Image (cartoon, rainbow, N blue to C red):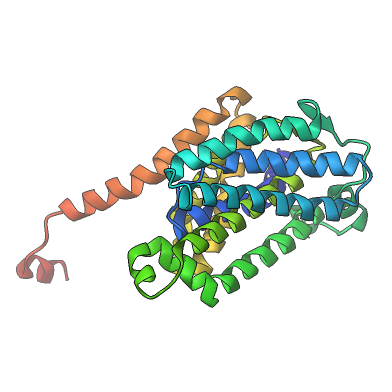
Length: 310
């Protein structure tokens, strides 16, 4: 049980990088980007292929980031210059990436079990586990992942407060208003999508190295998992500021993975995980709305009743 939960935390931290990318498009840019399913697999496929061909794992991961950025930028060009609906543009890119990923890997699956990867490097560091009272709270591997995710979070917080980051936020809030001030919303949309999918592809590269293989179908459902992490995090931890929202996304990703691990431990079939993900999102979206509606419908107390309660 403990091993499963520790593994869930490690995976949750790596998937948090992908969730932060989804957050950039879903919440900041207000763009329904379905490129995620394709760019996640693109990052895993490219990193795995390069590592097998002898490329340094760190360089392979960086190149996966750049490939993801190119995929996101392509979606941005389709929707801004080609005037294609954003949802459809993402679907078209995602479909095209499936064939590209197969071309990169030259097969449906690439094993990395005997290759030197960033994950094996992290294991070789020998970072000790965080143990309190004889109980391992977090593994040494997870501590390294936590530092990585924290760096990504700090960079996003900083970037979204730069002039370009503020332009991207304004584009998501009110594109017409920001255009009236002379900003080029086409450029901000393309950059926002590129940054988002760079993070998604980077997460795919890290996950491929963590699990020891890349698969052409590893990106299926990633957009739903990313949205689940964002929504669950916001519901449980709030999103009153960029700083708090990015923390919530990271914690939401960990909570989501812990829920999945507990569901598997309870005996549910792995094939049910997509259904569980859908239920998690539905619950996270509906429960706050229902609770708010119930609170609003509560009869207000008059002055006499309030004084009596006092």
